[in-house]
Length: 143
Image (cartoon, rainbow, N blue to C red; front, side, top):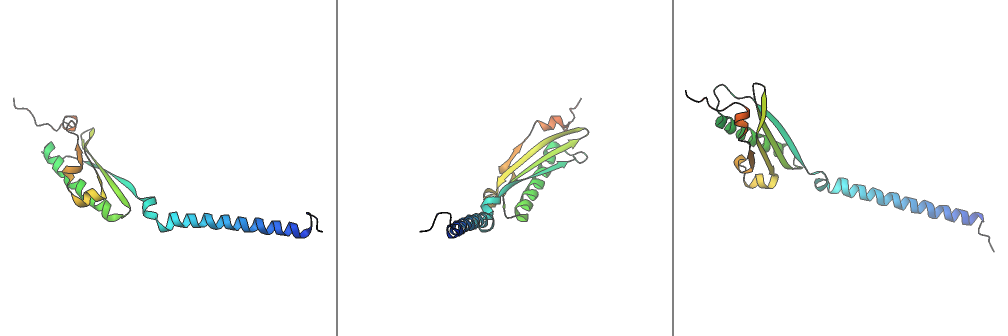
């Protein structure tokens, strides 16, 4: 009869330990491959933010500045979705600078699906009308 401390028992324990360790490493590798290679879109899909600052043109009213900002926000949104298929949401923040004042004038936030269905910046934008006075873009009052 063999004792438990025989060389064959020690060799069998090492084989079982080695096989178990190999199995654990194999499962860990398979998990990594499934999450990083097979389904990367769900893992890496993310929103993106674009910040743009505009300077008013000479004699440009606040309303005209907003129309220009909408056109720029629309182009930036479309460009962001076109550039990277993994982006699922775009947030475009447009600020205006007049003299030493800087204020946000609109924020366009939209998902890829909503933009594909209705690519209209007016629908997806939040407007900051108080920026008109912060930027001193109110028309001069007649005397």
